[in-house]
Length: 209
Image: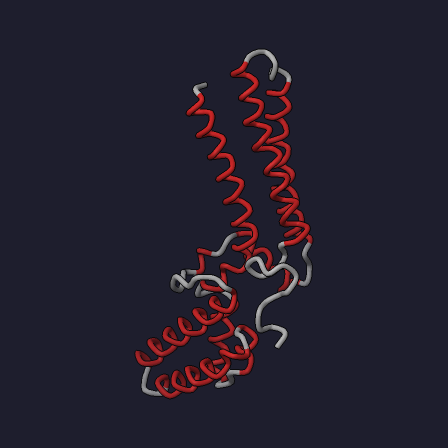
């Protein structure tokens, strides 16, 4: 293996681990910007009932006034007919989700269809609905175990021949880097990034207000 190829593969390994950690730490609430996500679902019910209160937990206290104003404007437009209702609702969903995402410190890239929700996040929602987290724990535990075992197996096999040649040694180092950084990334997430978009243990901005 050439030095250039070796370095490229190492960089890809680091990139892969970085993307994994980013995905696990940030995507947990990415479904908030989907049409089937909890923010929009709460908004649909609130608009039908004409009560903005349930929506306010999704935004900072400083943003509450803007949401109240947008909500009242939306109610007024909805009364003008089916087409107006459809447009007004979408305007409000966009406004609410945009402000909610800004409160998370996350970019808003538009509302997405429900199928954009990560399967694990869908399971997390189902766990809350059912009152049991067992299925979610089982799925994620198995996925994590499989990921660790696969990388461990490769690192262990290449370690046996690490001193046979320089090329074999580099193959082991590559496998070792992938294995240890995968474990390190998982451990970092487990011990300290359960918050909302990297906020640690602070929880969701605005929820405690």
